[in-house]
Length: 148
Image 1 (tube, rainbow, N blue to C red):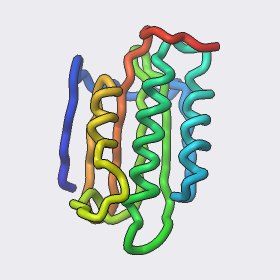
Image 2 (image 1 turned 30 degrees about the vertical axis):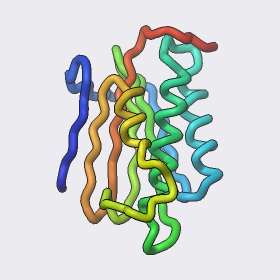
Image 3 (image 1 turned 90 degrees about the vertical axis):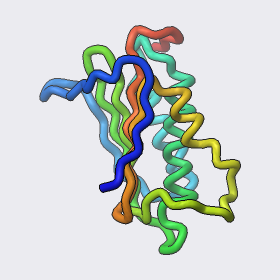
């Protein structure tokens, strides 16, 4: 699997333990799933000291990338989102089974989604091949904007 990695801050690999609270969703790659996934992650984060706005935007961008790019030659397919609350970070993973990240000169967007995700998450890793794409985003706990 080809791998592209972008990270900032502590690149410590936080692994979930068995007791770590988490959610997992399987959604169709349609526009309405972007809001559903964003709201599910935001609700999961309630009551925790996290930067909720940054998380919501990054999750929306990652899910929108799946809807717009992952299945462009084959139609819609599945996308998965998971969120795991670790000791010092929230780990959010968005993945699909699409064609992987390839150049798209006819892109309907501005091509800023990955850059925006990279700026919002404390650490982000993009993994992609012709069997799909996986975006792992880590957000520091204890940051501002505490909700709930």
